[in-house]
Image (tube, rainbow, N blue to C red; front, side, top):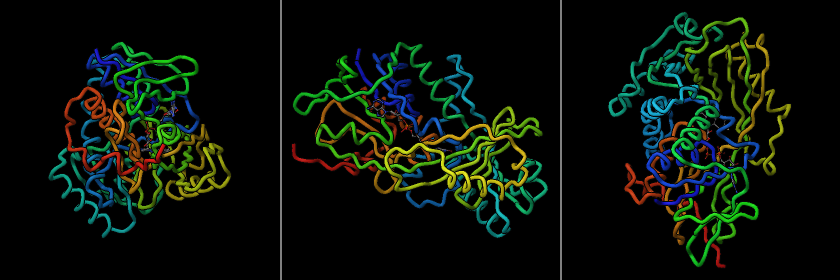
Length: 377
Ligand code: FAD
């Protein structure tokens, strides 16, 4: 049985471990529980089809990720994991300009030609829009995308880990350091304990570069801090099926069961170190933009603020595959602002690579060498 160690138990590592354990591999999953884990803070929007990003390689990955969700959720349910916060609630892409609404609907229809999972595309007037999301401010019409979904990143991560454990995976908490001989990575050290493996998969998000440095590999991962607010709309009912709200700005609003509203998020570049503080400026930005969108949020209870680091690789395009110059070592990173959408799918592909199986997609476009600089040792 192949022995594989997975480092990092965010959405990517959890999914990789899940797929590997289900395939019968012997799995050790190691996580350091860093404050600022992206998965733990993520909003949970699964709706890549309306994105204006032109990069086709990015879009293909995001599309495949969204398409994979219903299958994954069904498999987890068969495994007894029903608490993932996943629901195909649909999304409302809102605007005050009718022309923009028509253009969005057209773009969605074009994209549906090779992504039928987008589902029904319906233009809604202001009244219909507010019926779907009663807290929304005045003046917005929308395009409703029925195939869009939302998920609770924390709950899905935990469900994947539990299911992996049920299939024999072990989870340990601690800081993993790579062990190697020549150009072969052959295991991991956690404190004084050494664990040997046939393959090591690094899914360390914003912290991945520090792991690779001892190998003389500079992994060009940078990160963006995000602060996101959780509110409770105590005067609303049946919020669990409310759609995701996607405004024209970089903000968003989504609802979960039990009156939970998630408003986000900041996009903070150039932060000093792994600064997980909740800042006055961050809160001002998120709440100002959120309340402008939905003024009635002002009456909500502020439940919690989460902070996470979105990991990015050059060109804002994820990478995945073997680390050049090394055997026994594969990785993926750079899932950025769409990692909940793509992470479960990419984890499945990493598992295939670790088992020497062909990935389902051509991964050349995501070659890890694009994010690597080697230094002479
Ligand atoms: P992470 O989740 O950060 O996990 C990395 C893990 O590696 C951490 O647990 C860390 O402790 C561990 N680690 C690091 N170094 C070591 C070590 N040496 N030893 C052991 N463990 C180690 N995506 C969407 O698709 N939709 C959204 O709506 C969405 N909203 C978001 C909102 C916010 C506020 C944020 C921050 C992100 C959002 N994202 C969203 C993006 C998504 O959350 C990320 O792209 C994704 O979670 C990245 O997952 P990851 O597993 O690569 O990294």
